[in-house]
Image (cartoon, rainbow, N blue to C red; front, side, top):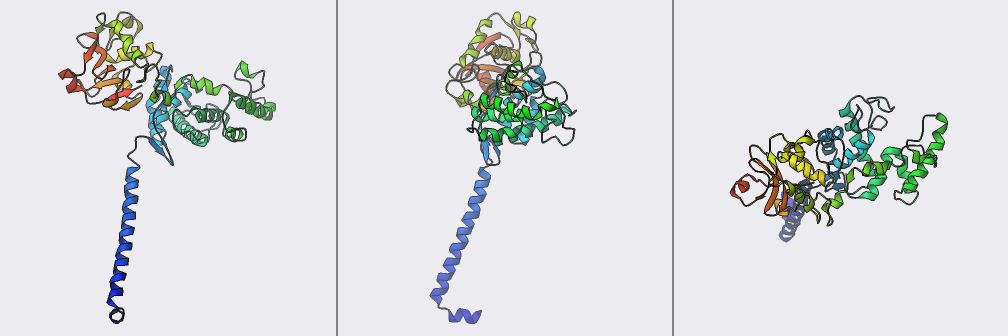
Length: 377
């Protein structure tokens, strides 16, 4: 090696050294870039699942208390499997599937992810397992359908109908224009029913299906689910929904003004119709009542609390809050008080010593207990 160095001209050695250093620097830069990209991929606001990132969140409407009680379980598995923005849609789906009742609330027995129980309807006897399997079935359906967000209704309709019919519906749609229509659902049901009619195991679930002899699955399944669901894109868009921060969001803020000066704060009040008729509320029951007046079911009347409300909808920046958003305060505990935003400076709520009143957010007390938690239902 020493002899080789003596033979090679010095200027060549210098050039070679510079080339080696340049290559090393290039490789090091590449490694650092990959590391930074990997770190950055975890910092987004959406839910990342494979190559798809879902953002935003829809709203569930008018579902029963039996369904809402499963929201924490659905959210747990939705978060685990990367579909948390679709919790509202899965709650709507559960409302149609079972109303939240029974031991198989997601009706997952016949699905591919049930490997523990038999494959006949209602074989699953563990509601937690039903939801675990159902969330995965749902994830598979929206991925196969190409759903991009909770507001991507064209693809969501395909995913929902395939959840009901089975995955064969994806291929059928693909071969017939690539987009869900009710006519395609009827045609697919007709074809499949002819194949299994002889078994005597299938009958029309709805009278509307009888004239078509479309008795395989539920041809109106999509409409049945979506009547409980407000798409995510509407919430974040310019039009807004009755309770959102859009252009009509002030309806939910205004509806409670009727109780100013004629209501009473009672901790635990407002959880039955007699209390409400007399204007008796606490902070969370007042918010629940106000949203119900504009057509949004947020919590069971007897079980609403700041802890149920602080998990609904989407968290937004305090700088971006709009009329109709829900605002939380750290009073006697974290998120111990709740109200409805009127504008950037005021909110309406049921206050301990006043009943329903409009409060100034610049008041030193409210400034002290406000930590920035605002949600858009």
